[in-house]
Each structure stands twice: as structure tokens, then as C-alpha cells.
Image (cartoon, rainbow, N blue to C red; front, side, top):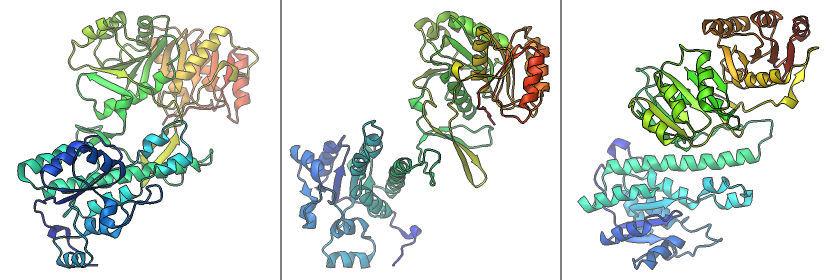
Length: 526
């Protein structure tokens, strides 16, 4: 193999004499073909693309005329031919290539415009079968893209209609395409085919996956959503990747920061568990809920959530599950709130909230974790992956393990506190009553300490713990946790169960006349 070092590639503008156009998405292709024709570029094309160009009275040559070989196998084989790929891979600045191309009668192709069969869109349809998915795997397209991208020193490659204007602008201004532009398009081309192949691989991984297992190969391909000023701290570079704009619209205020995104993620995941409830409000600080409540109206839910902890909400995040009305907006506006998240806003609420330029307002477009979405966490040498914790528990699934059964009101309080504790960092304890968090203890190395913090916060705010339900994200390892809860005023307990000392814990609850239910599943959040 005769190699050309990258630094020796000809960094000169490239004149386009021949172009091959073969696209699935035909947006703007006629306009592009018209501009190329005006620039005296010979156009080669295939199938439907050639027909569309020809219908616009633009001269075009079918690939089959160039190769001397007709399209076959229902169009599966069109451009897979040495005449085409020799024209794409030939180095016109490398004399041995020029001599060989001349001997084989291969003409250079300086421009390839290709976008691929819509595989990702096809498999997203509910009625898509493996046969349909397979027929939407493009073979010739990625092959041409990779060939042209590899030879970017001598070939331009376009993979999106968004790139057409840059090409035509340079043609109009100087009649040639700059080296740096070609290199940029090559980078985009390789990213494009990598994303395409990742989607195909993931489809077949899911198709063949045991329900109890995650795939052997993890293929992640995410486009940059936006660059961020910095990460958790100013000395850390950061960006966000993915489709965040499908979930939220930050329509007022400054661009979201790295820490904002983590807070918004926590808020969206919690409110997803309350999306079908009566009006609900949650206040977050550093990804942890400091107050959550439900009520007959949104402004009452805010009042109850704020009462849980009146200090922490300063500079925090508020999320609600109903349209944000003026009265609730007025209450929130009384303190400095960095971000407000709602499915919609009344006109009057918007007029008030938009008066503060630094405040970010977000509309929820859709909620996450409604399916078996995967979560990722970076660790040394790679990543940990798990399904999202979308597990919920219903009244029917509660298992009463004490002599006293919970009352109807206690059951409501237990289910509410269980929804909240799922979103509190371990070790997590939540005291709740009448649809309101009374005390939240989070992120402690001891479950008893988490309970003590929750109790202390409730007392600090002057909230009564009498008759509260207590939720624990994991089992109580000893009876002392239940005893401390009873001493504080709790009368009912919800926990996963599963400790080797469950009987001791249940016995302690019986002695204290507490009602205890087991859920059978825990909600660790590390």
C-alpha cells in the first residue's frame, strides 16, 4: 500500500467536475442539482433521485450507464461497482492512482451527496417487523459515504440537506471547495455512519436479547445537543448530548448549565410518578427534593411543599404536574427560584414570571422513564448501565406484616411517602401526612441518622410528626429505626422488607401499635 501522510495531503481548493447524487431524503436535491448544473458539473444519479432531477429538466446520467451494469436485486445493488468506488477512492494528486485510473477507464468523482434509508424512523414504528427493518438497512449509501470521506483530500461528501448551502456558497464565490470544509464534512460523514450502524446494531441486540439480560455490546451514539459553559465546576469542560429538546423547552432565561440539567432530570423523574395524580408540587435543591405535596389545588400543593423546608428552596427548582396558574406563580415568586418547570403556564402566570430575566422557565413536552430506558454512570474503564427505576407500588401490592392494619388514611400517606422516598438519595427517610412531606432525611451513612435529620427538619419548621407515615428506601436493619420513628410520632411504616432481622423489626412495631407494610422492592439511589 502506498501511503500519503496526512500532512502531505493537498490542502488546495477542489474543483468539482462530476457529482454522484443518491438520497433517501430528497429535500433540496433539485435545487442543489440545479446549482451544480449551472456550475458545469456532470451529475450522476440513481433510481428515484435521478427521476426527480430529470423531471426538473436537469441533465443527469444514471449510474447504470456509467458502470455498464444495470441495477439489480430490487435495487439492492446500484453503486457497488469498481467504476464508482474507484472514482471515489482514487487520489488524483497521486500519480500511480492517476495512471491506474486511466488504464481502467475510471473517472474521478469529486462530490458525493448521499443520505441513508430511514432505519431509525422505520424501527420506531409500532408495526415494524424484522423483515421491514432489514430492508431499510442501507448498504451502498454507507459504502459510498465512507469511501468519499476517506478520500476527503480529493472528494466532497455531503450527508445532510443542511450542508447544501455551504457547498453552493463556496461554488458561487470561488468555484472550488476549501480543504478545511471537505475535512469537516468527512468528520460529519463518519459520525453519520457510526450513528447509523449503532442504531442497526442496537435494534438487533434488542431483537435477540434475553428479557433478563442487557446486550453484550453497548453502542451509544448521541449528537451534541449543546455546549455548556462548564461542568459542575468552572475548571471542567462540559456539553450535553442527546434529545433533551424532545422532553423540555427552556423558553425563558439563560441557557441551562450542567448542574441545571442534573436538577431538571431529578425533577422530571419525580413528577413523572405524579403525572396522573391530583395537583402536585415538588421543590428541589441539588437533585434532592426538599418538599413535595399534593392537594386539591396547585397553590395549596405549593404551600404544603414549601412548608416542609422554608430555607432550602432559595435558589432551587420548582416542578408541578398541572398548568401553573397565577396564584401559584405569585407564591413561588416571593422567593428566589432559579428554575420553574410545568407542563403549561397560564397567560397571567407568564406575564408575572417573565419579569425576572435570570429565572429559567421550562415547559415539559414529555416525561422520561415511561419505558425501560437505560441509565448510564461513568466509572473507571467504562460505564455502569441499568434499567431506569420505574417501579411503583399499588395498594393491592402492599403486604401488611403487623398485627394492626393501616387505616385508609395511613395507606394514602404510605403510598405518597413511598413515591417520594424513591427520589431521595440513600440512605433515605421520608415522613409524610395528608399528602405532604413533613420531614426528609437524605444521603446519610446511617438510616437512623437520616431519620434524625428528617425529624429535626420537621421540628425546625414547626411541623407535627404525630400520626405520620414513614418511608424507608431500604429495609430497617435493626428495630431502633422503627422505635425512633414511633417516638417521633409516626404511626405507620412502609419499607421493602427482606432483612434477616425483619421479625425483630415487626415485633417492635407491634409493641408500639404501629402498622407496617412491605413493598418487596427497594429504591436505593446512590
